[in-house]
Figure (cartoon, rainbow, N blue to C red):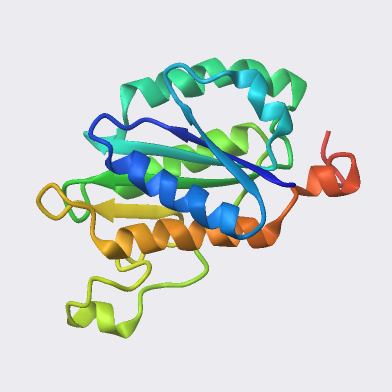
Length: 190
C-alpha cells in the first residue's frame, strides 16, 4: 500500500487541517497517510514513503522557522538518496491573498528538488465561478504549484480544504513512487 507522509509545521492548526484533508483523500484513494511534525519528525521514516507533502505556514514571505530547521536536518538524506524519485507536493497558508505564499511554495519545491523528488502540482485552476465570489470550489486561489490557502478571519475557507483534498487524491491516483515501481531510480538518475 503506498505511503504518504505529510511533514507539517502548524502553530495555529490551519496547516495541520489542510494536511489532514490531503491525508484523508489519500487514504480514500487506497493509500496510507500519516503526518510528521517538522520540529520532531523521524527522518528515517522516509525510507517507506512513496510521497511526501511539505506543509508550512507562510511567515514574512517564507516558511516557518521550524520548517526551515527540518529542511536543514533533511540535508543528511541527500547523500543516501532516500527521497530520490518520490512524489512531492506542497501546502501553505497565510493571512493575506498573496502574502508571499508563492515564495513559500517555491521554497518547498526547491527542497524537494534538492532531494531528487518529483514535484506534483494541482491539476486544475479555479473555476470561473470563483471570480464571481464562490469560495467553495477547489483551488479558488488559482495556484498550480501547490495549496495556497488564505485565512478568512481565523477560518480556513471550504475551498482551501477542498484543494488540499484534491492534492491528496491526485497523489493517491499516482500511487507508488516511480522508484518503488521500478525497484530503482529513474533512467539517468544517480
